[in-house]
Amino acid sequence: MRVVVEFVASGPKPTYAISFPEGGLPSGTSWTVTLNGSTQSSLNSSIVFRGFPNGTYSYVIGNVPGWHESSVPYAGTVDVLGASVHLPTIQFSTMTYAVRFSEGGLPSSVTWGVTIAPGGSHNGTGPNLSVPLGNGSYTFSVHDVAGWHLSNGSYAGSFSVADQGVDLPTLGFREVVYAVSFAETGLPNGAPWWVNASGEAPVSSSTSQLSFVEPNGSYRFSVGGPAGETGTPSSGSFSVNGAPPADETVAFSASPANPHPRGNSTSGGLNSLPGWILPVGIGFAVVAVAAAAAILLGRRRARRGPPA
Image (cartoon, rainbow, N blue to C red; front, side):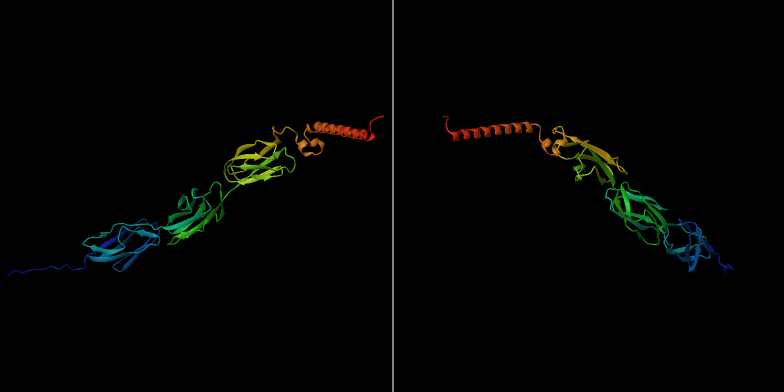
């Protein structure tokens, strides 16, 4: 006869710990895990559940606003098989949202940008600039663009990101122009003169001063005045680089092809006639008077008849 003796362990079954480690979250950020219906939260990098005997248990990792993890499924099961369980690290990364800056007025080839704190510097061309940012509060400053000024919008400001993208007001730029001034000497009062810069429409004046505006750049110019007048310099160049260029003075004088003094052409009377007209005119007058006298004498003799 065989006797079988079965020993049954007395006392509670052994239990084990289940650990959920975390990485990526800033210190002090709360995160949660629910295991077998029990939820724990932590501000540290680990959540540990204790007192689980062998078995299979369900878990759920709680959402952390502004953060995302893909290293461990957000929901799953854990098997306890005679030992504590350490799950892989739940690695969180910042969830970003598009913060969109836009501009109007700049040529498509001109680079513009913003500096975001925290977030760094961002530059681009074209009307739109998109920056991915996580939840939080931010400040920004708009970069200076040489030759352009922000006429609509602010060079500095702030915004917040809260689980969605942000569209900031459009920044309006306008080109900065600077005064270009010319002065003339030598022309009579009221005489018109003009300056043509880089093929643009001429700018004219009947006073001694003339001015117009230009953006940054290099320019060629030419000068003109009344017929018979030559300006010195008659042409040249100037540059605009963030400030008005130095004033240009043009000295007018009679052209070599017009050797007679200006006064002879404008004062009137006999002095306004070329020098050769006066003696020739007097000669014609003398001849005319002599001819008239001869005709008159011949008529008188004809009336008297032949001498006795």
